[in-house]
Length: 422
Image (cartoon, rainbow, N blue to C red; front, side, top):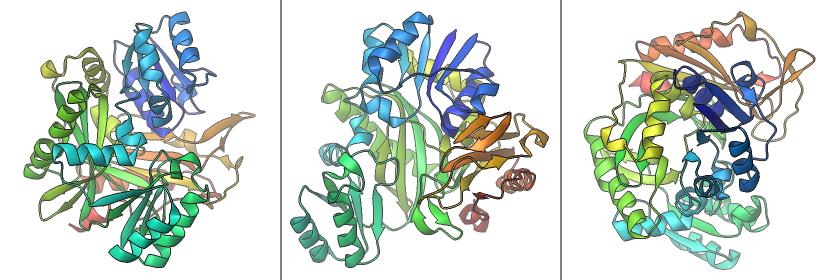
């Protein structure tokens, strides 16, 4: 098969790595890709938000299957255009992708199907939003309604912080994403991620993980796109996963079908779990980043078979074959992230690391300049390892980091602390 993956981050590098291991893959193209991806696949200079150009590229290159990595092409309707052109595609339609692209839409779906989630209200003006915050009190959660690259969620500890978040959003800090704001009840508990494949009718759980969103050790400081993750998530096992599937995921999928927008692709279910009861925090319409890296590390070649079954509507016949293993990824970010940071600093030592089914460095924001690998983004590398238990995976991942020479980089030193403590 000729396969095209859209995206150029660590998520797409891990997808490419897993797909490349499957003998069904004859040719692999990633657009736009990055310096690490270029070592295992062809990279193409393609505007992945232009659905017409993507469909034209797929037809010109006799692409059999397209995997859409990031959320923006999904919200732009790229999956719809590909399917209209007769190209098999992994990723939900524009309508279905509203589960991520609009917080309000998701809340309305949850209300309609009875899925447990936080109490909420939506606003398009600052004054009533601030009045609601003062009425509800803090802590409280303020969310930009639209896509904000994982950064449009503010957990405000005080009403003053919440009102400041309202000012930021309505002043354009998050662009069009903040034109409408959703304010939610603060939910306490332990957060975890549940990943399921949906083919419009059937649902297949494919893994759990936990990530660390805050920049600093001990989960302190501002939110980021994710500073590390591990799989499986101890808090999301057995009865808890069963409840999440039956009380949240299945009712949502049925409601989407009822509305004429069946969901086809991976559904990333962000959960808050307290006393064994899961509640929905948010949906994402794609593999998480950096959660995808640990899931692909554990799934390997079968990831392609599962995504094909999903796109083909054959999930009722598919099975996930898990090894009794664990995986951890640690994000190396540019100093200053998630604020301002510089690009172009040289990273060395990567060639001395093992790259196999137990050890991988997935490139997130890198480029090649004059034969050297340089930083080209905020989150730059995902140092990833598998182990027979989480402790072994953690030891291997941090041992790899010690061999990477990048003075301008930063990483957390406590990834997995919660699970290790337990």
